[in-house]
Image (cartoon, each protein chain N blue to C red):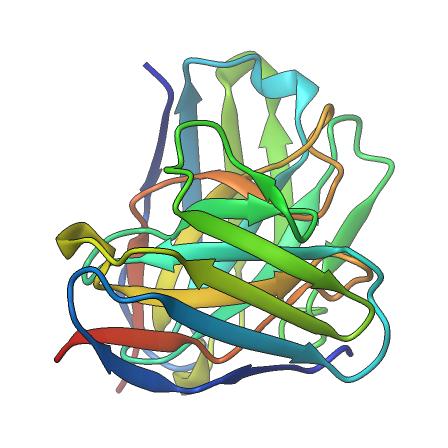
Length: 122
Length: 107
């Protein structure tokens, strides 16, 4: 069974840090581009970052560039998002998602995790 | 960034109705357009990719069309399980961007 399971969310003060993880099973993780997408409570979806299968293409949304770092550990089938200098506006459910297409490089998301909630508040 | 605009933002419909949702890009995105369905408390689910390709396992009552800047998602005969929010998303260029969503409610 294919699964993407996020963890690491929680309540953090502004300026604080969190590290999200996404544990993957049921497909060959190392062969696919992976993404983080977030959703503000009651609002829409926003793409955050991507890490392609070999690390040659790593991208961030402008709103998180310089504060968030995406990484992956293929041996552990795990995707990460290190979030530093958190702001109130980073409050959201964070989803990891597999890229669609042959190597997951087609820019859409064909598998999603259930998400983990990050709340930034004093 | 490529702005995506969906309309309507919400609609009310009955089981069996034909429903059409539109999505417009601020510039051409050719057929790099994808559609998702999201139910409350759940992750989005891919329905259509590349404007008109049906994702495996998605019922054939869902159809996507369009190219350039204007796109449409059609549900030919609305079923009870289709009441949800639908999002379009462009995959032409980074940053990848989504439309604001269309909530399909029971009339």
